[in-house]
Image (tube, rainbow, N blue to C red; front, side, top):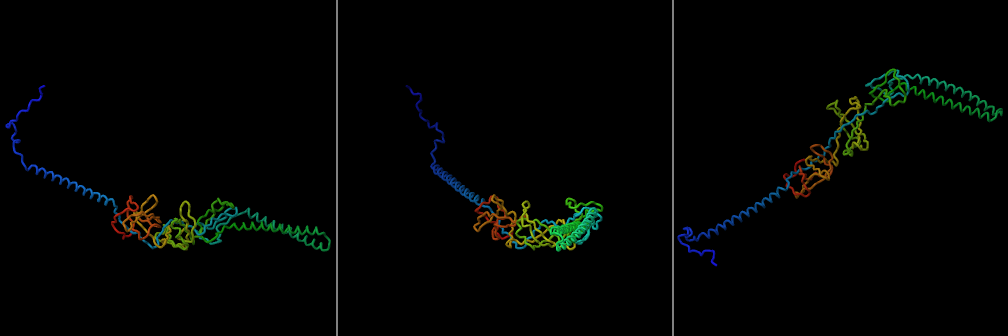
Length: 402
């Protein structure tokens, strides 16, 4: 079967292009090899350079992950620190005087602001009912006394007759018993009269001590009722020669309150003037609602400058516990789940979380009660991400004050 492919035809030299008819150049092969080698060197150099850049990048990233911190030292203060708190001023003694007997106000002799002495009459009360009761009691005493006299005579007579056997022992005992009963009647009548006479003394309302009248509700002709505590007092007298000052001191300072501790009292009406007071005692109990201890101070007030009810401020000078107070900037404090903490750095530049207790918050500064020493190197502004044992870079060594 004949083939479909035609037989090859001989090539004519004239049909070959001129470029293919040229003799091959011997230098092309070495040149290609050199170009390939150069390309390989360029590639290897690029890879090496890229590896070095990657290592530098990793090193830079590792270095940038280390926090740079500035260190401070806690401030040590041995001076007594001021503590200023609101205070209430009260009179040393204050008495609200009510009527002890019922009657009508006859007259009043003093008004508010008057200084009075102990026993001075403040008002007179007219008591017509009481006067009649006293007169009746005197008459009852006279009657009982007369009956006792008759019983005395009878008892004496029967005693003499008994010695002569003129009367029986029974009759004599009856007369003696009657005399004893009459003596008891006299004593009862006298006691009733003395009671009413004592009430009569309350017709004159007097001051119980030296002081000043701070309130008067007595009016001429007004009806007053005895033993009525719900009615307003006729007079209120206050002893202002010495005053009591009450201060609610936070529990954190309660251990430093000792009798004799001095305080400076100031009031708004006397700007720039201070009054010396002394601590005389405390309530010895912390209020459940306020969390404070009530301190009582005494202050002399000879010129009456201070008034009961004044709003005042008491400034104490409290010696720091242990003789030293440590303070830090508020920015150095961290709030962690376990409590309040600060960051400290050891000699190997390792950070540690140190939990502390705050004694007092001064706003820009805080006083540290426990958990810190004066030699600790504290991070001035610790990052929130600070971890225990983390390596840090110290920007400035602890030498400054907090």
